[in-house]
Image 1 (spheres, one colour):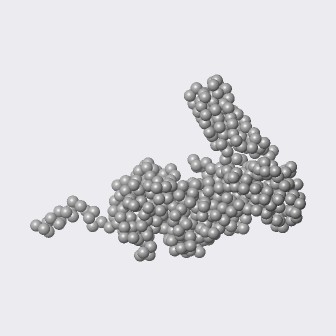
Image 2: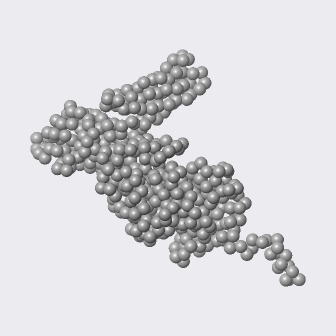
Image 3: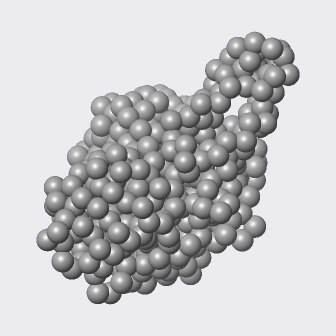
Length: 466
């Protein structure tokens, strides 16, 4: 009787003897749309071995888990003490009279977070050096990056729904300006446009029209004869106020103009021109603004900041090529580094730093091996680990993994594109083992919400069963 009862239990519960891989495959087959591609890899840092491999070597489009290579290579290759410096130089070596008798150079090295406040602080430092005037020109130097402001200039057939401001080694205020538009009280009349940027540099073309119900606006900028012409067009609802964003067309010249304004506002006379150029080899470095690399890693990994990621990608390229860094240089730097770790695979392809491009591809196994190399480096691991999102707490995982307890067991990075849902990072299992995982789904049908739910179920199963 007991033997028959045991057979009965096995029959009604066929999963009772399933291993972890079987359970995960059953979840996948039950939930993923037909013809979906998937890859899952999990590695135990205690056993120093893989504990789960399902299509682990299959290269797939990664979406924003691509950023883990961008930030990880930056930390491993450049170090967590590395800073991204915005520098002020001059070709005048005698400043005893308080006047720069020559040019002043504003050089960017790729800091995407530079703001007007940072620029003002540089001007105040000049003032503290006793500088009261500049007789030459302002030379803006953005040569640390190759001048490819837009992604479609370096990615063939690039067609994505995630537009970004121009990428430049001399970036200011996200290379964007905000424009306030208020609909008129009269139908078909132009809306009223106000903005708080430099009126001497920007010119506004108002092509808006007030409508009864519809608001649909667009702002674009072009650079003509040293000025930015911003065209605002479309419909604005009667008496309604909205804010639209315009991308700066020429970031270094924009930064130079704002620098000039701040010089004059702070009593430093300047009557020269703003020109593009490069810092001479023989020059006098005056001051700098230092941005620690680790301060950029968190918004990229935790909040998936695409703009910052593309700058960091080109910083990697610029350091690799010793200036004038290109996307190709960044790609080669990352491949060279992966080869040095003996984890490069020929299918690996990385054309941007953010993961927006569908031309990126790699396997979950390659990513897990890379995350293991970061784990093995105690100098940078904590900075990297703490830059990742915590479920139910912050970043892109703030509304994920609701059944995982406690949620801080996971540090992860999400990825999302049309037809792509990915998740990778670290998780502490109930046994205390730190696991490294990567899950990637590529599909033609199905909702992103459903794909995330499936990944959350798999992650919770892994965390609670190893």
